Image (cartoon, rainbow, N blue to C red; front, side, top):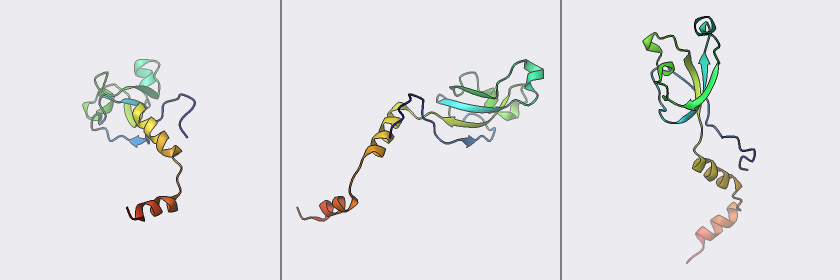
Length: 107
């Protein structure tokens, strides 16, 4: 069944390796390692949503030693077309035996 509550559908959670942004330009939901960030920068959220790499991508690259919270896990929002296609495929009902019979019958 398709998502009827108008919330975006997301792909699986992916553990981030800190080697830069693997999904530039895609809409993502990220979890951040914010331990110690409150003392340095004030209020700091441990999750965020937005276009990946939109703010320079510092949180994606852990090697630069910056003061950004590091992204530790992310998931990508499925494009609307993919959501529609998956919904259509889930809603398809068919009889396997009938499909095989039609494939096997002579033309």
